[in-house]
Image (tube, rainbow, N blue to C red; front, side):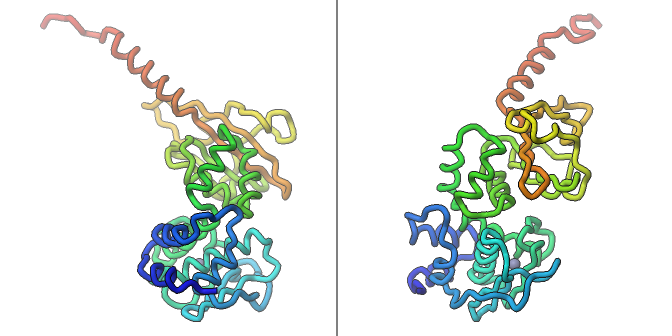
Length: 290
Ligand SMILES: [Zn+2]
């Protein structure tokens, strides 16, 4: 059932963030998992239907008839992917600048670049979808309640919010205060990398061979182990590399999810120590008379 007052306010919004703030103003008691289908129908979508056929590789998995307001998703999508696809298409529907009908592929639904007009719109629709399915204050409180960062938290988050592990990892990296990065490995290759804002520059990117990691299925998978900094981070000669540790979680479908972690407070202390040491040491040539 469409909410006219809400729709009028949404029409004045021009960014994913203002749209989300307005939606949450009307739904202050929203809980996880967010009911995306009733919300879509309230926000101007008139029908949710199946696409004509299963998505082949590279084919659209979500389509939006705009301004008609019909969202179609590929039949047979896992429920968590379908929820994200609906939220993504809803983002296109609500963002007035995204004109015309849409056919969105799996790649569009993972887009986080903004270097072309198309990618920027896909990225905005993804920001809307992530923010709708994992509302910021709710998500932040949930993650804080889980305690210190651990890779094992990611499946717990994905289950609670009924989203894919990829979507949970992306949102986690976006919102965490910790200096960490989440790296998905499949068939010995890096499949997806999601660093937090404060994380140092990574030396690996999607499609690279994965650096060696402790074998999963051992005790080490649940605990932090030291990682070879040079394997993962860009290092320079003039700067002391940070101490890096990692946790590995073996995934049911094969592959692994790795959490890389830098203890920011310990790094700050080490930098201060190094600085102190450097200033206390008499410099060569000091005290000489000319
Ligand atoms: Zn799209």
